[in-house]
Image 1 (cartoon, rainbow, N blue to C red):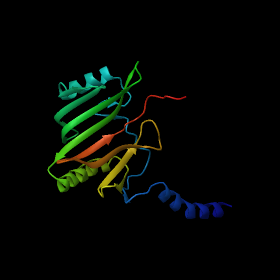
Image 2 (image 1 turned 135 degrees about the vertical axis):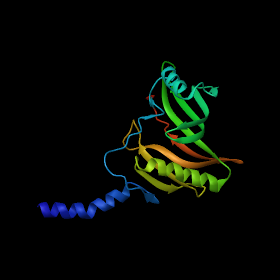
Image 3 (image 1 turned 90 degrees about the vertical axis):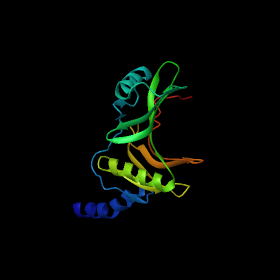
Image 4 (image 1 turned 120 degrees about the horizontal axis):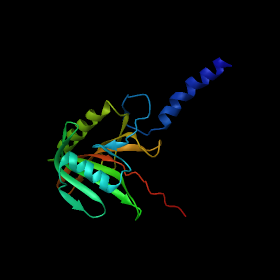
Length: 184
């Protein structure tokens, strides 16, 4: 009986492993799920005022205070990487706020420069997080990695090339994670 189970496992396991991901390539970090529970010293789910205090202690006064509970910092280093813009987003249920996304951007001169910077971010994070590479609708490679702090079946972050008009950047995008549970 053990031999039959072993044979079934040998034949089914590779198919199950590849069925989970529709990917171009996968990095080989194995082990436990690599949850992305915090960034820049702030736990996802933290209220706005607490997160603002932590971030301003780390980066100084925010560069811009946007509507809808968003903090922006410019020209800051985090974990040895220089970012041109750091954006921290929150969601609110009218009573509470929750830190639910973070976008770290490295400006680029053009598409090739953005791809190099994207791949640099991938290299920096690939030792810590399992990632897969895919191709987006614009034919650019992007990476999904980590595990959502709220759902084991969702990715924790995305590394991609972002462009709008003449603006290009490599982007590390955490979330958004939905902390507000609205139902009928």
